[in-house]
Image 1 (cartoon, helix red, strand yellow):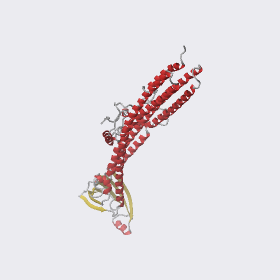
Image 2 (tube, rainbow, N blue to C red):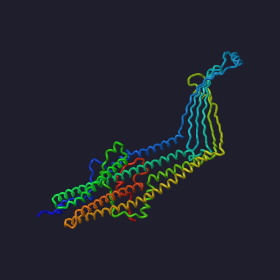
Image 3 (cartoon, one colour):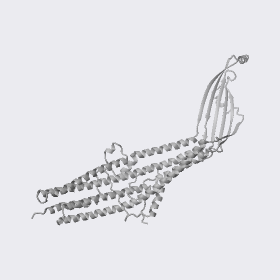
Image 4 (cartoon, rainbow, N blue to C red):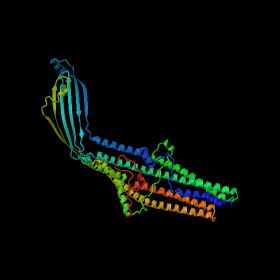
Length: 529
């Protein structure tokens, strides 16, 4: 007795059904060589040009800070002056000098001046200006041996109103320092964003590879169905019209496979761009090796107001952009005292003391001896100066600008904090929903497997056609794709929650290290309050 055609087809179908059943139970292994999530994250830190641009912005702010501090540097100024003056004499003067035995018609004078000055401004507004001046004068009449004079002075200037106090004088430097701190956080915020983006693109590539695997397996089984039915048609055991449905079904599966290949290529390109690969490296599409993360805590996450508030409170302390906005407020606030101080009159007290020395002679170095020769006493000079423009529009305008900049920084900080809190709420509920969706998708796959096995059994008993079996298998393939999509949704939601809560990087650390487990588990202990 010959074996019925449907029994032969069932024998062929059984291992295929088992293959479909095992598809989502075992992780899809991608061929080597490939990259892990850790490789992708490290490459992002090393090569992404967006991060390098942000780092250069930080370096620029450091330059501004150093330039601001330069106003308080000690300056050493030295000068050398040499001149020659020829003054004609009147006839009467020439006759007078002739009586003294000097036959001259002009006075030829040479002057040499050495000056060294070391002014310094202190951060409280007080400035000092030590100065030493040496002058040597010779001429052809009265000072042929040379006259060497010295003047040593130490001047101190004390502002009494405008320019007084560290808050007014050192405001630019302190503000620049706060800006540097803000830019450090800006860099870390960019690092967090780029790492989260890379992780999401990595998971997209993983999911795209799994979708392609599902499509290819489905296409292989469709070809097998078509070959088996064609064999039965050739033996006149199945009506020729039975093959049309299978041909259409196979064509649809091939189209799905082509689309899956395109999606995988696009996903890998997006991953390469997120990693910051160069133009030449983009040609070699990286293959992913890690599997999608999974919810490891028993039960679905339950979102409560207490839990959300805890996450929001933590995010406002940890997020780099929130901290950067706080530093920007501080930087703007530190400029206010200086701008307000400029509205005051200029009232300065100045005190200068020193001495003069004098020496004659021609030996080398004699001018420098004047610093110590014939010093008779101290010179003391005191003064008070006052200056004030009646309108003072420049200072008034600067004060208005500084005050507006401070208010803008406060508003921006509030906006950043509000946006951060909202993103935490969205990411928290998103993770909860994604876990529930993944659980439902897996249940759907399980029930579709049971339904497919039921259709196979009915086909074995002759109660339905092959079309019913292939249709149910298509439903199972759709459920498998939905499961991959739900699994990807959880991975993306996890990365979004990490970014929203500020737990991708440490905002206060200037150099970041990479830990891929950040994107494999939730940032905090998930309680069920």
